[in-house]
Length: 114
Length: 114
Image (cartoon, rainbow over all chains, first blue to last red):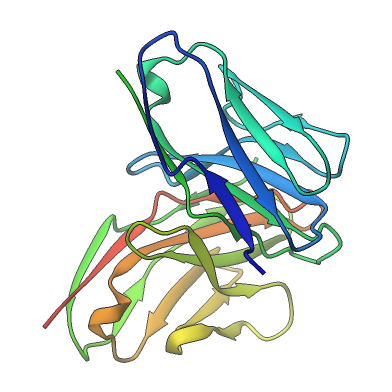
């Protein structure tokens, strides 16, 4: 099992450009999440998908959109990148029936917006 | 809404010394509590979690944490650290009926010196 995979690992964008971060899991998990990590702020939830076909906003959704393509894949799109979106992005998944569900994280995408 | 405070942003310690990383949370309802570890340039992985029962929880790599409901704390301890424990440690909470969404603290960087 590869677990949770993310592409790309690194990306540099110019202000106003768009891009999609890809995430896939092979653990047959129902729930998937996108977080951003900024120094001193821990991880903050951007969007989540409790199950295939549903998505909901988290703590910091502005400037982002998501698509739950199927049970395995959950993508994050930046339509018009801004320097404030410079961050490390992590995708995670969990089996939603797992009580106090352990989340399994991907290796992250380091994004710089100039 | 719940929140998590990690009182120390950095903790330097010598190899083979004991360490305690502090975590306090606030919530008006019952929570589940987690500690995650992030090694350099990697995603997060679960160290341990408290769901219910015994307040002393043992995790991987010799770490343990104690849930103290009256002090709303969940401090992480290890009696003797190794160089390989150098990493960032995150405390997190989820409401026990909140769809497994995590709220993270700001993180504590543990620096183990030889």
